[in-house]
Image (cartoon, rainbow, N blue to C red; front, top):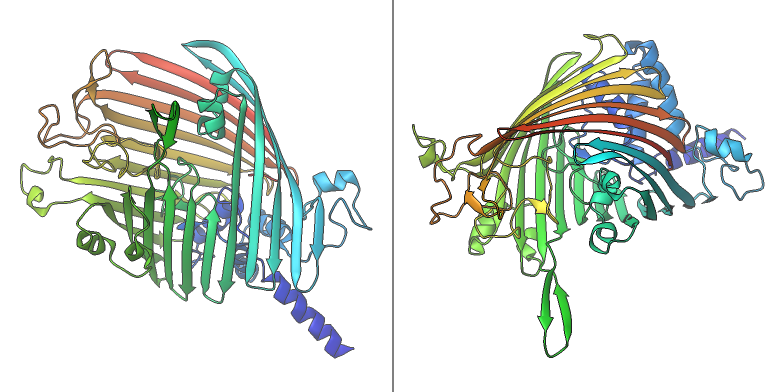
Length: 559
């Protein structure tokens, strides 16, 4: 009997750590773990590249559990809440269709996993779950009276796991918009929807999915899901929420204080339409575009971590085998291929001078010529770079319920563009920035305060100040003076309208201020409520405009 008990315990432990499904990059558990790293409870927790897997999250929570003595009362409550959330002790009756099925109310308001259908044995687990979102949007701006829109999205998710090393996930949903189309466009899903914007329909949709193989310290993933990449939690500099999701192959390994991530992604360029007379109709084509991203991370001390990364954009040809090699210096490889592509080099650092405060910094070099570092030559168009510095302050410096974050980011003129015309080699995906949603020739200050009322309820207030130097255009929209204020308008050496020496904020200066108040309430494992109020003010030399947007969103199985 004792041997059977031990075997059962080992089997449950094995299943507990076999969860290789991703935890969405927007899940609030990341804020909890980040706060504990800043506090010094999780000194080796690494979230520069998200998402992590469920087993990664659970492992971190187990580390925190061993250090309960260092936690506040609120943090202990949060820990217990997330341990229940991510425990893989799968219950027999937590699906709609089972012999011991919960009551319907429990499916909506239980704090453990619930599905429409669940199958689970010692080797295979698969599940089917509905995804539903209701969002009511209110908008008021100078160009419109009070506008409102109702957005409803509905679909489903299918996941499976085999043994401890193979898992997969598939999600698809469709959305319907009713009311004001202008108000609906404040939602990123709608603003980036081809169906809504190109066909004029009142529908928007999305699909994501991936296959993951994980064995020991190695992980290989093929799929499409949201990836956040950056040392700053507020505004990840490499990949942020701004872009559309894209397809990728990703390889990771993590061993003790070393991490490495490699990604090859398939991006989107605008569609070309040509009328073919012999066919009698338009033919649409789209040229290829790719991104390669690498990062090597090293944490020599518990309070210090550093990273070195590369990104490279290439386009208009098949996949290059050289760029599928995980361990290679991309800039040297692209020069050996006749220097056709756009490469970037970046460095990031995190440093915790004392428990409760963490500093971070990132520097991205797009194009740096040492000749231009001489006195009087810094403002050359050849010096294209972006940098960011930020901080996070939490308990024990602040009371246990408060977290304060802030950062400053600057993007020099012409950075992230490329002098070939169009957007084939720009740092964009289908016209949207891959990094922070900020044009070149800009600087941004962000401050955010978070008040955690309970493990389920949190309030936040965020302030952004953006200063941007835009290109000078005439009444027809033609660029008269190019000061590097548009990522899609690069520096052209032989055009008089392009300044070879441009200072930061040259051109038409616009200042934007945004105040954003957000409430998030986790009603249960499946249900969460999000409320948001944003006030935006844009001011330039010639005009000023303001807008107010409010939305309330109820999600079932969605973050």
